[in-house]
Image (cartoon, rainbow, N blue to C red; front, top):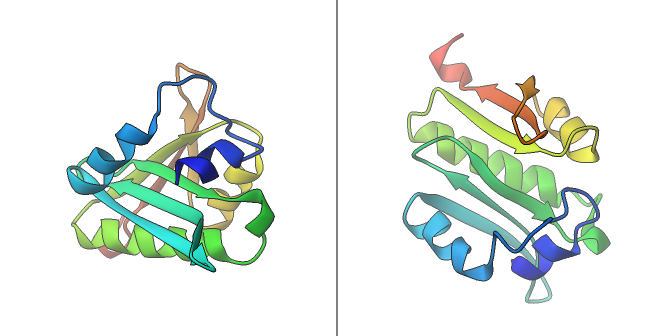
Length: 130
C-alpha cells in the first residue's frame, strides 16, 4: 500500500510523517482497509476511520487509474463506514486536484479550507437525513 501511496502524482506526501507502520493501526484499531489487486499486486487501497468518519486514504497507482478501482474502493468504504452508524464522513485533500473533482462527483460537499491549506469535504449519511 505504501508503494501505491508514494507513486501518486497528486496529494504527494510532503514529509515522512506517514510511514508503513501507520497502516496497521489505521486498519486494525480505528477502522478498516480495502485493496484492489491485479496479478497479485496491490494497485489501489482505501482506509476509513470508523471512530471519526475520516477517510484516511484512497489511492490508486497511476498506471491503473481510469479503470473504476478508485470508485469501487470508495463505494465499499463509504458503505461500511455508514453501516457503523456514522452521521457524516470527512476528508482533507490538496485543493484544486482531480481528487476534489472525484469526491464532488461521488456526492461529497466542499466544507472549507483546513488550517494546513487542504480542502475539506464532507459526506452525510443519507439514511440519517440532513
